Image (tube, rainbow, N blue to C red; front, side, top):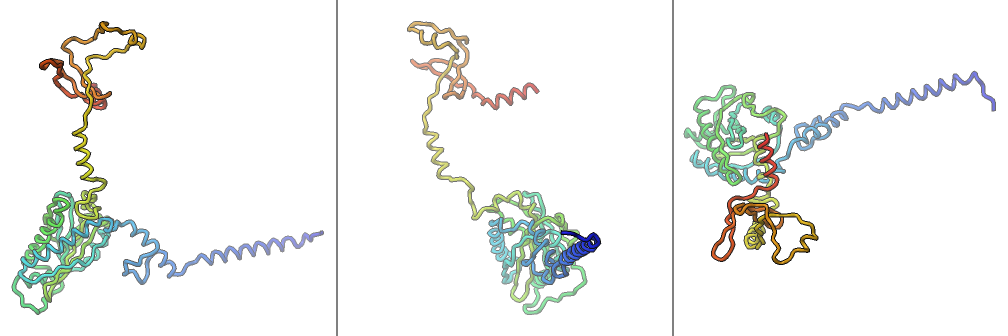
Length: 357
């Protein structure tokens, strides 16, 4: 077959143009519209719904530890609700109902930005856990507590004046209520561990209530306090760093759970060990002799020991050295008086290294 050289450049140009068109077509297919970009990043019109996060935003928020991994927390906070119901009734001399709305995990920075102002933020310290926590009281509960404690009429809505700072009387009354709540929190944690929650300071600006870094994870407990036709919200925040020392206790499914332990088996094993009989040998000296010499021993042969008469003897159980003592006589029997225990080989090696240093 023959080919025309003049047509070769046209064929090459046609092939290059087709390839360029394919590349441009592929590039055009990679362009995403705004809705697809929002879906990929996890941002869109449904940002307020925290349960429907997708895309990159869901991956970022998946680093938060869910409180459901600490099942004992729900029991502790349920106990706190019962204690607060009784103590706040005594504190206000009114019919108070406390309910647990939500327990969730949040980032500390996101929580500070979500606090509705004006509010009173109490910073408290967990003494035995060596860390801090927050108690946030919203304005509705503040005015309701002040109204109840100062004898306000029932059925009348609390007068709210927006834009003014809280007075000293309002701050002092709310501080007394927060101290009651912290005392109840100490009793709620008492079955797990003894921890004292002490009020450190009262803040009204969230920026001054920073007790952790913004990306750190924390547990937020939202409580609803109703006093007949008045009430509001109280939120308790505990960073995960505060709960870390008692994390193993919070992993329990029920109060007093033991991981990998059986008290009945432990008691049975201990009683059997005390009743076990062991053969103990008193060793005066040890010699290594050829088997031929041992086989030729006869009655009346004398074995010379390389120890003086007052040298201590070793009591052994199998191949393990137990104690050292002195040989004596008690009645018609030989006896050994124990003088000191023999340290294990590992302890002896450590003692030798310590003496050399």
